[in-house]
Amino acid sequence: MENKIFTISVYSENNVGLLNRISGIFLKRHINILSLNVSESEIENVSRFIIVVNTSEKWVKNIVGQIEKQIEVIKAFYHIDEETIFLESAIFKIESSLLFDERQIQNIIKESHSEIVTVSRDFFVISKSGKRSEIEDLYKKLKPFGIMQFVRSGRISVSKEKMEITTLLEELK
Image (cartoon, rainbow, N blue to C red):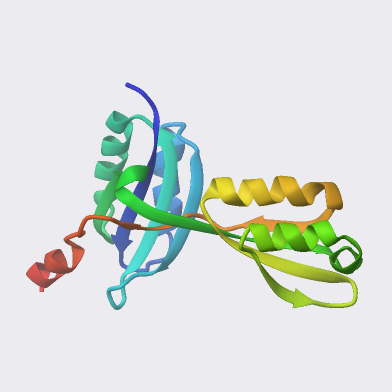
C-alpha cells in the first residue's frame, strides 16, 4: 500500500500519561510523528490531539484502533489532506536593522501575507499562518538575510465533514 499524509484526531479526557502511551503506539510501529498538537476541543473537559503521520491506510487504521483502546480516549478519527482544512503557524525572529535597511524584507513580508508582531531595538518578529509549503517558502526567502530564531507549530485542522463526536458523547450520558 502507498504511504500518504494522514491527520489523526483523538478526542480524550485530559489525563497525565496519555500522550506518552499514544506516542508509544507510533514508536512500536516505527512510524514517525510529523506533527503533534494538543489543545482543548469544542467539547467542555475534552482534549483534542491532532497527529500527522506519513504511512499507509492499513497502518493508520491499525493505529487508530490501538489509540481507541486507551481508557481515556473517547474517539479517534483519521483523514487525508483533502478531507480537512488545516494550517500551521510560524514565528521568525530577525535582526531589526534589516527591517529598515533592506527594502526587500518589507516586500517579502507584504507578499507572504505575514504580520510583524513586535519590533525592538535588536530584533523584530514576523508571524505567518498557512500551509506548511507557504511557511517553508517564507523561510527560504528570509534565510539569506539571517534568521535569529524560528519555530513552527504543529498542524491544526478541522474536518470538512461533520464529525459525530458530540452525538457520540450525548449517547454516552
